[in-house]
Length: 386
Ligand code: NAD
Ligand code: AHE
Ligand code: ZN
Image (cartoon, rainbow, N blue to C red):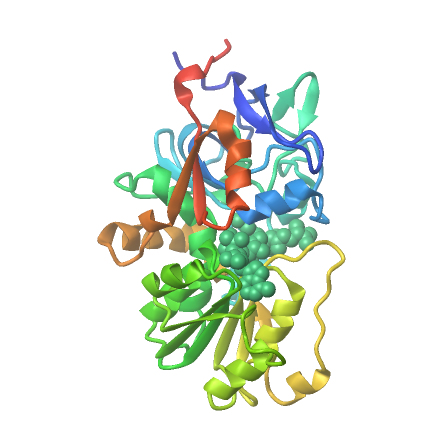
């Protein structure tokens, strides 16, 4: 029986308040309005940004909310005026939307679309309302995606169809972590033939390593405080690994990197979210031209600091979201790279959980040997209301 135009009753993991486990609830998902798309979410990855917002450290964090932004699913129905995806398409929701019409999209300088970002940050659809209800209350959306629900509604600008041959239990990771790191590296001009250091070897850091290798960087140094990350780093393209917590007494990671690279790195990347690491990543850059790319997300109130002299002497501090990738234009090509075997994706999945086990997935994330946990949204239990 078609569910088009009807409220769907299904399961979702709801964050009722900060710093509490998610609660598996029965939720009502309204049909998509004009310019919106309802998606049956088959799989979702767990990203550190979900944990960060759940912890209460995100200045934009608001509750109750359906978190999740690394999903893969199938279009269930579309509202009026949707012509970029159709029922049955395999899709990845995009937390960095792409309308192709706003000042940002038309600039050719950024992937940061301005079309839906303001309402997205408030946890509502572009018309200012929510499509989720549970226990008589409106539940907020998250990052324009809310993939911790078996059905979600997103703006037409926040979704892209991908090749149906791509297994969604893996391709969902291209909705955030892998694309963020890989894009940040492959879109950085001049990385070819350079030396590069990546701080933080999680999903994002490994993806930067993979991108740096693909671009032909000649020396790729991975820095982490967990020795277990050495093997991972080498598998994804690092030529060296440094445990920055195990340097000789009195030696800083900046001094060490500057020493072994004859003055510093051409490019560094922070994939930790730690503002002290971000400073080290800048200061380990070569005088005159070194570029530090900040990708990690820091808690509310945290600020970065350095001596202005570091910038006066030619180091550049910059950053990127979603790897600078324009989701609707470029993600299908990245999925095709995965299918062609030129982009590693399967290797990132170290843990699996059911929707009911999602809190265990968050515990696994913090255990140190988890790169990505993929949650199977489990459609055996779906009821659809008339
Ligand atoms: P992760 O936790 O899997 O990886 C972080 C790694 O950093 C871990 O291996 C950890 O051991 C290491 N680390 C911690 N402290 C360190 C230190 N002092 N020095 C060196 N290494 C250290 O996380 P992830 O999923 O790879 O995400 C990394 C960061 O990127 C997070 O802050 C996340 O919120 C952010 N992120 C940003 C974007 C974006 O678009 N800008 C997208 C996705 C994730
Ligand atoms: N809401 C936070 C910022 C969180 C943040 O920086 N998010 C990244 C994506 S992390 C994905 O795992 C991002 O894309 N930022 C750009 C944007 O437009 O949201 C805050 O500090 O308010
Ligand atoms: Zn993420």
